[in-house]
Image 1 (cartoon, helix red, strand yellow):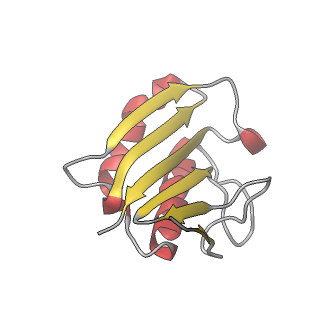
Image 2 (image 1 turned 90 degrees about the vertical axis):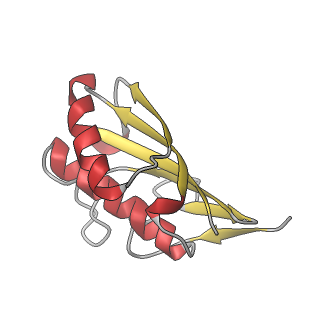
Length: 126
């Protein structure tokens, strides 16, 4: 099965040795997104704004792959403060209707560029 690289200017360019996403067959593996604005590369201010930006970035990558966030079957969310767990659920509900994808939410010490939240996704298209 072949694989292709997914890339879009509507999400921040990779800042390391990875691709925004890799598509193989009808499965898309989206790399982690933090709250960076894709144009200015500035971090959104505050937890809620960063979380919205994370999901907007994932949405842009999903669309570049020919899909949508509703194609997500798995999410991983990384939080530097687990007290923000309820807020993540609230914001996630704006982007993902039921039935929700499988998900893990993990507390971590720190994230790239001082981000407060990061999320990655696996999509199955069609």
